[in-house]
Image (tube, rainbow, N blue to C red; front, top):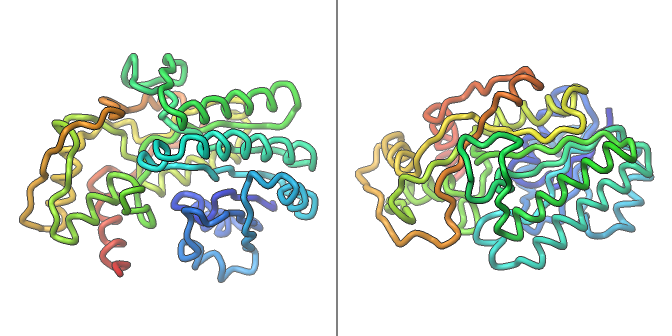
Length: 314
């Protein structure tokens, strides 16, 4: 098949492209490189079945030309404004990119004969959870522009699936981590902690450290995302994509310190006002529909991730 990956220069998107190429697909990646990195695509760019186009998903005319020319069979849609710090600093851009850009993807996919769109959503749609673990039908407590944008796009996907006949699936990712993840202040906690510790800096925990997250290793994330595109059972569904095992932020910091062998301890600062207390997933629906159980536990995934950071330090 010929497959489009949006946001393909990013952390998750680049891994998806790599995996799709190993499965024999032809892959086109689009990214505006606002947060993505050409270096993430180094392996893919060596493959004759891969091509990269610099494109912003808000540019409807350019997207239209790409869809018309390439005649995609499927789309894996990951392009978005992400990262806790960034989404609070640029709320208007979040809504513009994440909603308008996603609608552009759905529209052109439908107009030019694409069979399926896998829309990457987020566990953030649950907000501060009313119940844990979070099931797909748990109440949504949307409280940020990012969460709102992702929930709106899930509804758009459902409309395109049920009314217009474009097969769509929305996947609510929980705390993906692994090689290539951004470790800057605009990035995510695993990468930030690893970068801190490797530089002999104490990892900073906001609050008491007993917040929980459902950290899911990138290889499991990628296998689950691609699996959702390969089967029809997931068409029209919203699915949690997670390991299904809560880990406290304090435990995460201590595991990173233990694996690296550093003589450090976390430091604690005042809890941030937007901090979610608990976030972990019920993955029973995911396992039933996708037939896949995550294979990497947190210690194994962290060791692989830390090895990558050590090999790729500037």
